[in-house]
Image 1 (cartoon, rainbow, N blue to C red):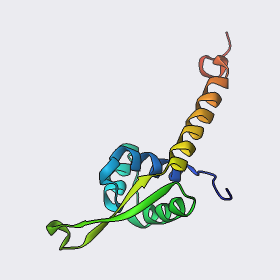
Image 2 (image 1 turned 90 degrees about the horizontal axis):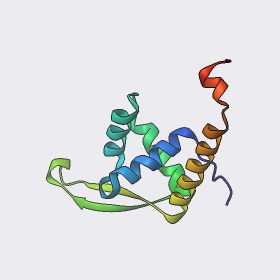
Image 3 (image 1 turned 180 degrees about the vertical axis):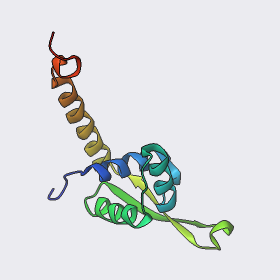
Length: 111
């Protein structure tokens, strides 16, 4: 599958979709990312990442029901696909392997 590399922000967006499970839509993803990363995140950067991730096959979307608090507008809800879950699993494995490969001397200094 071409273009399946996950950038850091894309990985964070995928993880956030998983965290929010059945309430993952643009604004909720943005708010959760800001809360967890303590970084300013724009809604447009989240939307761009969501589009890329859906094109890569890592997310699927569907329109949720209209709500009164949104003025009768529907939300576009996102969910992880099997490919998205696999990509997150591979990313976690790679990061874990790399963290474990850093020699203790890096953290503790020479004796």
